[in-house]
Length: 340
Image (tube, rainbow, N blue to C red):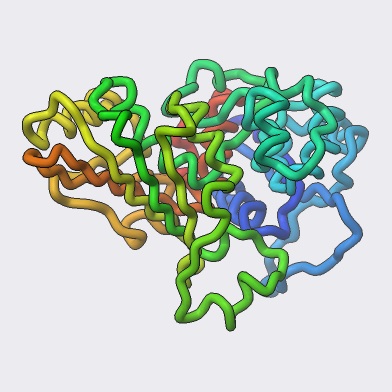
């Protein structure tokens, strides 16, 4: 017997990619939904499954097919240009959309044009998309029609920074440096020289220095100026996980427990934020395959230096798990359903 009397059918476009595959894995164990594969391209490659496993229902990623099956929501685990192609039609038909691409995360076209190479084909929707970071925008996400799922790097950075920004304890004149490391799955499944085994193994490289498209998401949601914030993304030879070390100076803080109290007050009722005692910090093993964001810090009172360490799984809290958090809010499920 199902926990819920009625299952919500939901569809995934881009289910062959890493984030899409993670979405399906989580949705298949969610007690309130029935996942559908939404075919957008002719590629037929599928991972083999064991004998006796029932294939998921598959329909075209078209408004008519989605409407005929009465899908409650559609996930777009697709590149930005594909999301711009599909989202407007689904939304016009009254279908809820959760977009995992970067197409609708920024609020204005000028900022998008500066940081993304793609030409935006539906800029009128930028102001309609709710930024899907539940810890900040839960009330707006609940019952929303259209949610832009955050990027993986900005999820960890914003969760680490915003409590301190709002408490006005960062000495912003001294600058903030975010040193962010990600597993290779963050680059997607499409083959490239940079993410091939021979290039990744026993290697460690920085990329998109000062030009990473996730920077404006961090500035937008933590309300920081670009001159105050430096971000460097780095690729490490692991499959999944993000670890960010954020270097800053504080003001009006005389002991480490005061910083901890700021985080504890800000995240007192958050199911997916875990805080560490002062002087202790998380690592990737603590968060891999979970929807948690773990935050710890080290503080030196004499120099007023603080190093904040935030860790997430880029495929879960940084993508699929957070998308399901948003779906739960949009469809009226408990927020942590299918994630704990």
